[in-house]
Length: 237
Image (tube, rainbow, N blue to C red; front, top):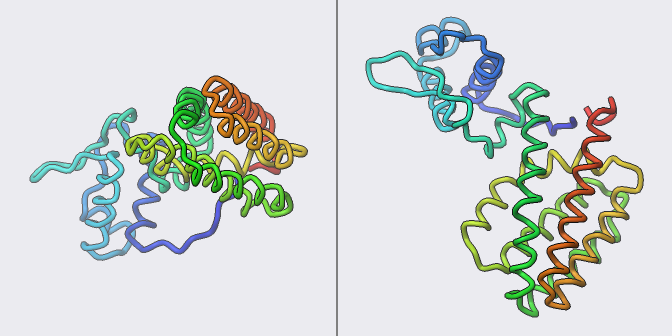
């Protein structure tokens, strides 16, 4: 899976290495290295060690309590929407999470599209039309296409006027981008996706909830099928 190179602070780099160890069960007793152990192993200051542990805590991966050793939290309770986990979890775990993301979207987004068909405004439709038109001109620009794709789905969600759904969609955008970088590598994936987006837009223009729901489901299930195929190929790694 292709990942963009980013500069990371020293605490984040240390936290990333600890995340990898936690995810691969390097600490079977559930005890994470202390500040002293971290600063000794990585030759960093106590402030850096403390900040690295705070990052792990912000991901809900560890429990920090005064006067006690830092312990690993249950794996089901980690903050999986945080983009740091995409970068640092082992490939097999990322793959599982991306599949769960696809399944989550198939559950949620067809219903979101149906609700949007009932509530969207003329301005919402105009923005969606512009996005679809821009997609048709971006087939040779995969990274730009992903951004248009994300915004298209966000616009549909915003049209529901539901802030909780909006935050879920926004918070999962890093995982959505990671999944699309893989599924978009399928042959003719972008032109096909554009036509699927256009079908969704036309259903929304007709203000037909059932048609919008069905069109969104077709699109998302096609994305998942492409992901399952392309993720197995070396070029997608």
